[in-house]
Amino acid sequence: MAFRFLAVPSHRLVEHPQSLPVDERLEPDLPPVHEAVERALSGAEFRDMRAKDRLRALLQGDKPPKLGAPEAGFGASAVFAQPPQDLPALLRLADELEGLARREAGERALVWKCGDCGARYAVPVALVRQVSIRCERCGTPVELNATRSLGEESLIDPFQGAVNDSRRELAAFFREAMARGWPVLVAEDRRVTPPPPQA
Image (cartoon, rainbow, N blue to C red; front, side, top):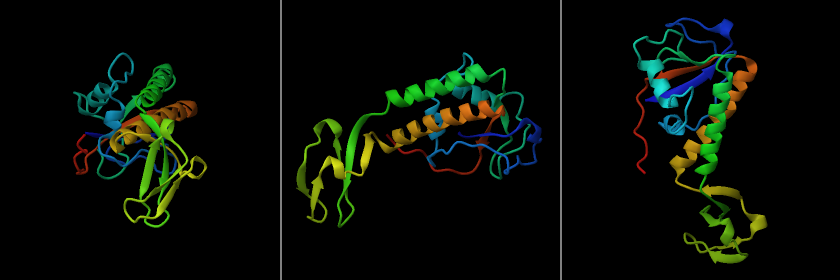
């Protein structure tokens, strides 16, 4: 199941089958990777319950959600967290998500790109030395100089990177929604989506 989080002011909530307003809405900027949000919430708790279990209970429980959908292709929305009573629990969840992202960030590496063919090279930060190598693809010399790198990235599989990006985005989103005093809603994506990448 894929989830979509959003927040709107309480006075703008509408009943399903109407759609929630798009002009006054807050959403996390999540990577477009199927199931990244569900994996991002793995190991996190909200109000003494696994966050994923709470989402499933809200969206697939005995009482179906009644609020408007975010847009076509999504089911009705349910309230995941409501200020002010859920403020402390949601802030704890945000802290937990950021902690999980830090713990699973992986080793850091500096990245360079070949000037001719664009091939990318990553070297763990601890092993960086100023050297010149030949590009494996086109043979052009590539200067591995720390001051000329494209920046720092994590040496983790791309899907785990998307999961950690989702964790950080959700944490920032939860904090902003609570700061505005807006309820956090969740809806199920009912569009056909490809399976997740295999690890």
